[in-house]
Image (cartoon, rainbow, N blue to C red; front, side, top):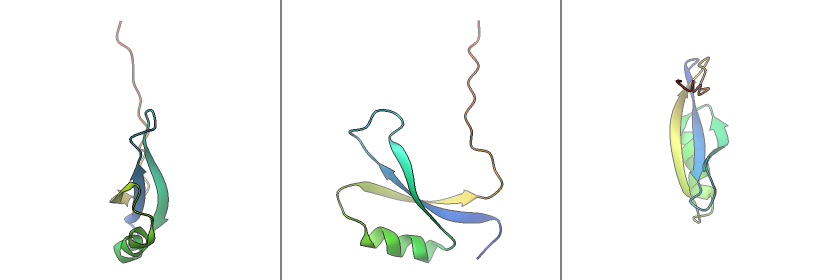
Length: 65
């Protein structure tokens, strides 16, 4: 395991309104994440993403006047 990142499983749902991309699991290794994806039902689209630790992913939007 690295101290720099984790592996996240996200599901994309076309029928949902924005946001339609949800995290469903976080794992310490890619292999654990892929094993879990292979066990999930095939009725959704899944993505495995490498996520850096200690990073802020907040989105800030300033409306310009």
